[in-house]
Structures are given as structure tokens and as C-alpha cells.
Length: 160
Image (cartoon, rainbow, N blue to C red):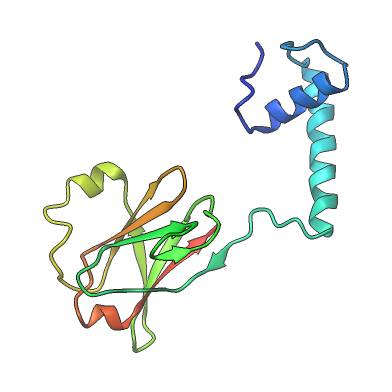
């Protein structure tokens, strides 16, 4: 079965490469042997590109200044929270207090975020983190909402 052109998987990249090389017809799928060989070649190409400066799967610890009473921190191009290229994902995050104590934040789902009793009342240092993936930004929400004391610390999402 042909893969949709909008996917960005190894299989779709291999299929498009075989189509571009005219080794299979447009819309046809490579057979299992072609996929195995194509994946090996794709891995070799990525390994070479990484020696030439391509940065894949890197993780960056990024400090975000907390604001008392604010639980929303957007990350992406032109974002008020952290303006940069939109990261692929945030695998984990932690809170760093002003005294240097680190607390790993529990990553929660949209459902868990929606079911929280309140998401805006300043209470204490954050213990949970919800990442809302949007087209141009990753919107990071923390809970509880930082109070004045918590705002002296920083949020550290690990960006990938």
C-alpha cells in the first residue's frame, strides 16, 4: 500500500527515494528487501550528515523565567515565553528553586490537565507540566501556578 506523501517516516522517505530513482513506479511500495536495504542506506546517510554538523535527537536544558500567577509559557518562533525554532518535543522538565534544589516535574496528559480542579490560582512551586503541541509552538503549562516565592526559581524544559 502506498504511503501518503505528507508522512515523514523512514518508510515514506525510502519509498520516495525509490520513486525518484525510478526503481519503483509512482505510488508503488518497495518490497521488504528494498525497505531493508533502503533503511540501511538511510541510516548510513544520517550518520555521515551528523559528522558534518547535522544535529538530530539532541537535547537542550533551557531555563525559562517563571512569573508569579502565570502558568503558560509558549516556546516557538515569536513566542512571548521563549522565542526560538519550535522544538520537536519536551521529554521531561524540572523546576530549579532559587536555592538550587531541583524537582522533576511530572509530565501530564491533556486529560489530566483538563481535570485539574484549578489551573490559575497561584499556590506553590510547580510539580506538574503539560505540553500542548501546536502547529507553530509548544505551549508549556505548569501546575500549580507559581506564586511569588516559586517565581524566584526557573522552569527547565529539556528541549529535543
